[in-house]
Image (cartoon, rainbow, N blue to C red; front, side, top):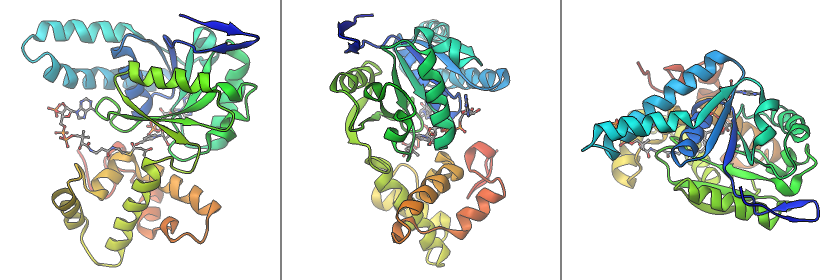
Length: 302
Ligand code: CAA
Ligand code: NAD
C-alpha cells in the first residue's frame, strides 16, 4: 500500500484491501470483480447462510466468465476461479473486517437510517485512511457521510447490475469529498477494469435519473392499457436497441428497489409527474413479487 501523509489526512490511498458490506446481488458482484482484479476482499453479511449463497453465486458467475475468457484452455480457467476465490474471505463481523481496509463499499439495503448506522459504527473501527463508499441507487451520499467523522473520505461508487458484465461505475463526489478521495476512487474503478464517470451527489446521479423515470413511464403506459408488457419489452429491444425491455429490466433490478427509489424521490418532489406512484408496482411489491430474485415480478422465473 502506498500512502503519503499530509498532516492527519491520508492522501491518494492505493486501494488493495477492500471490505464489501452486503453480499446480495450487488455486493457479491462487486466482491467478484475486485477479487478477479487482484484485490484482497472481505465480504460481510448478516448470516453465514447468506454468505455461503453469495460465494456460490460468485463461483457460478466466474464459471460463466471463464467459459468465454478461457474457452481454449479450461484448465487455466479452473486455476483462475480458484485464485479469485482465494482472494475473498467472508465474515459476519464488520468491525473486525474493516481494521485493515483501504476501502469499505456498502451494498446493503436501500435505507438511509440503516446505512447511516453502519457508517457511523464502522467510522470508529476503521483506520484513519480508510475510504467509505456507498453503492446506493438513490440516496444522498452526503447524508451517509454526515454520520462519520470523515466526510472528506466518503464518496459514491455506483455499480450496475450485473456487476461482472456492466462496464460503468459512477464515482460520486459530495461537496465534502476531497479531491484525493475522488482520485483514489477513480483509480480503483480503473483497476477493476471498469470505466468511471464523475457524478454530483444528486438524486439518481446520471443513469438512474434517466433510467428509473423511463421504467416508470413504461409501467404507466401499460397501466393505461396502451401496450402489453411483452409488446413494450419487444418494442424497446427491437425498436430502440435496449438489451432488455423495461419490464424485464425492472424484474432484473428488483421491484422493491425501483419502488424505494421513486417513493424517496416523490417525498422530495411530490409534484414531479415522473415520480408518480404506480398501483401495479405497489401491488406486486406488497405481494412479495420482487422480480427475478423472488422468482416472480412482472414475469415468472424458474
Ligand atoms: N455473470 C457473469 N457473466 C454473465 C452474467 C453474470 N451475472 N450475466 C450474463 N453474463 C454473460 C455470460 O457470458 C452469458 O453467457 P452464458 O449465459 O452462456 O453464461 C452472456 O453474458 C449472455 O447472457 P444472457 O444470454 O443471459 O443475456 P444477454 O446477452 O441479454 O446479456 C446482460 C445479459 C449483460 C445482463 C444484458 O441483457 C444487459 O446488458 N441488460 C441490461 C442490464 C442493465 O441495464 N443494467 C443496469 C440496471 S440499473 C442498475 O443496475 C442501477 C441501479 O441502481 C438500479
Ligand atoms: P440485496 O437485497 O440483493 O442485498 C442486500 C444484502 O445486504 C442482503 O444480503 C442483506 O442480508 C445485506 N444486509 C442488509 N443489512 C445489512 C447490514 N446492516 N449489515 C450487513 N449486511 C446487511 O440488494 P442489492 O440489489 O444487492 O442492493 C444493495 C444496494 O445496492 C442498495 O443500496 C441498492 O439500492 C444498490 N443498487 C442496486 C442495484 C440493483 O440493480 N439491484 C444496482 C445498483 C445499486
